[in-house]
Length: 126
Length: 126
Image 1 (cartoon, one colour):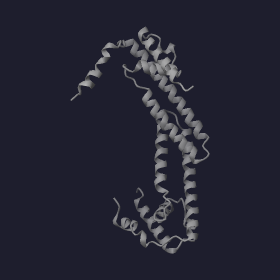
Image 2: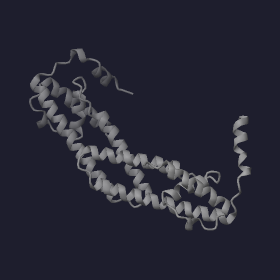
Image 3: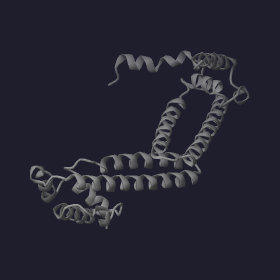
Image 4: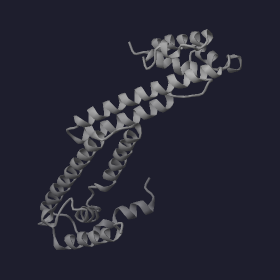
């Protein structure tokens, strides 16, 4: 269930500022770098898990983890300009990017991104 | 409530030769050994594949292979006495067991198993 503030935020696209050409370039670079970084981490995790397999249960555990990670990454990395504030907010919260990677985006976008980052901080397990 | 056809089907196994206690013990041992052997091979394949991962596509290829192997093994290792001739025929064909592992089974069963092994040989890709 979405909190009212999130729903409200999701459906105001027509009022959102457009992404300029230079902002799109920044967004693309930050998005690709975060995705690459996260995929490299999954690769390292998979190698480590595979290395530690001792019995069949470990094997199916690896399969399950890979499936989960693939689905999670598919859902998370949604490159639509209407979604990017939310996506970057989450990536910022999870430290796949930092504010420096987003330097050059308009202050309105940075405010929205930081606000999502705070939202995701609130959803972290205690 | 059972449908007539299902009930009928369930009880047609009375024409098949029963498995004696000693045959069941032989079957169980051969079945478990083959499964263990095959799972160990999947573990080795997974470790090797993981070790060779260079890019994300290799990662999802590993996931896909594991899913396929799990489903194939689930389907193949069907320990129902009504299915065992077929199961052992396939395992014999694929060399997960040899005739020696089945020594002690009645000649009627061995005939059926060899016949299934031949059938599976016919379905091998050319």
